[in-house]
Image (cartoon, rainbow, N blue to C red; front, side, top):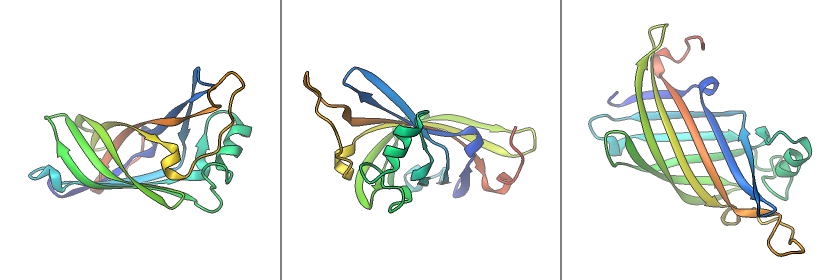
Length: 184
């Protein structure tokens, strides 16, 4: 995999999130349209890179009114800021299957550092002769750091939407030479 480019397979990958609602439950959501690439240097993993672009209007929490509100200027302002972007700045191997990927996340033209804790699940040949690799990544962020400050105070105390957003990314990447093969 040294210096090899990989593309994320959106059919077998996902970007999900969850946030506390009314201080008691978690609302889960996902983004349905996004792209990503990975350049892996197996000899020197710290030289590896990852980039992801997410369409903000593809947010889906299974509730149309909430999704419309999340796309509005109160939150993502999808009309003005159509993309969320992540670009790695460093990759630190912790063990054979664990990494820390540090990078910059941009939401609403606000860029902040983010640290992803990544599990490498391995590589496999697909039935069409291509090569695939799997990764799981987790992080948390404070939405207010990115200008997402809308909220409603609750009568009994607390707020409608928590500040902390947890993010989970599942990636199946296809070696670039095989990226055009069919999905199963």
